[in-house]
Amino acid sequence: MATDTEYGFNLPTTDTFDRSLVDAIDIKSPDFKDFLVKLYQTTNNISEAVNIRDVGYYVRTEILNGQLWYENTTLSSTTAQAPEHRPVFRKVIPFGALPAAGSKPVNHNITTDTNTRWKRVYATATNTTTFAGITITTSSALSVRATATQVIITTGGTDYSAYNDCDVILEYIKQ
Image 1 (tube, helix red, strand yellow):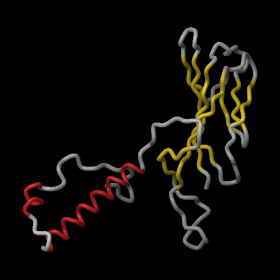
Image 2 (spheres, one colour; image 1 turned 180 degrees about the horizontal axis):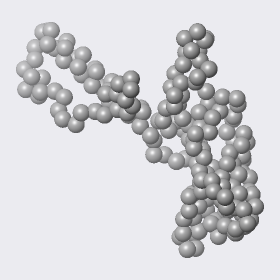
Image 3 (tube, helix red, strand yellow; image 1 turned 90 degrees about the vertical axis):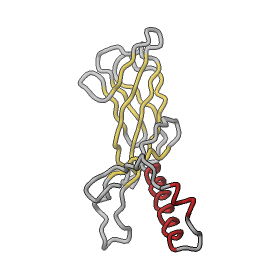
Image 4 (cartoon, helix red, strand yellow; image 1 turned 135 degrees about the vertical axis):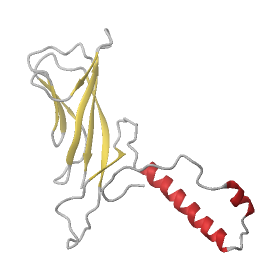
């Protein structure tokens, strides 16, 4: 279990219940009630652990990816909305071929507002002839960025058009 200063969620991998005690328990005894409480706690721990995992789906529709970011610093115990960890959404944008030179914009169709915060913006591209692949973050010659409406890849003066299959991955919070 995580504490206030430790994050993550680790479940025990050893048996939680002694099977011989489970078989021998009287359903009318206080021990049975204790067993049910422990069973409920274990089930709840499993649910929490599953819910905070980083989802491995990279799809073209918006999904919750399981990540949580720190509380919105504009909220406090005195505001109408309580501060909570903020969930992260992911969406993959099929970008197509990289440009020969300069910049290429593609609409991402994500509704953004003053609460939207980009958490990860990156792309992967493949040359389907040579099977060479690259990851695009940001460098002086090659970069990817997100605006309120588009993703834009800039190649500078280098021709990257041979990389004809590119996906941009956007991860963001909305609150």
